[in-house]
Image 1 (tube, helix red, strand yellow):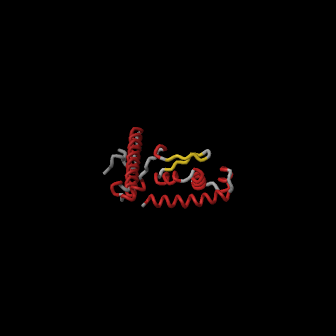
Image 2: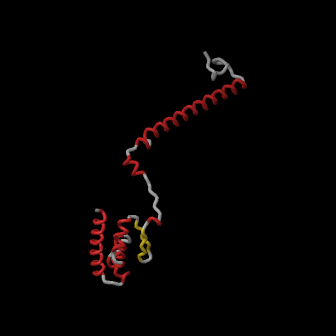
Image 3: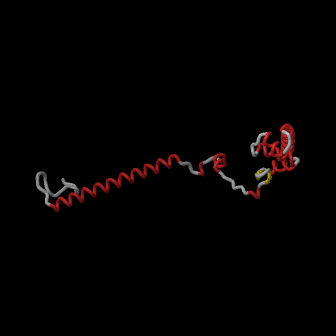
Length: 154
């Protein structure tokens, strides 16, 4: 029994040019169909592999969803403090209220130290005071800030 890709010439017979062209066409058709079949197989396999690794949002726990969430923040929603050439934005209302309760000098020292990561020596040079004064103000301001924050949380 002959398939559709088999030539009309039997074994040992010589093919005519027309038969040879038809054979080449059938062979090429077979090659194309086989290539498409395996490409489709690979594509479906890749889709299945991705689906196995993906998790639907409906299946996520609320804790996992919170980790994926992104909240937009806008400068108008923050408290802004000008310290030297920098502007520092504080998002926490409690922290902003506590910072506002400090004196201007103590607030600047705290913001320079914690937000701008400046050492006491640089803060002293910037404010034109001694390093020891900066250290004392920073420690006292930090203790006052802690007390204000603790009172605010109760």
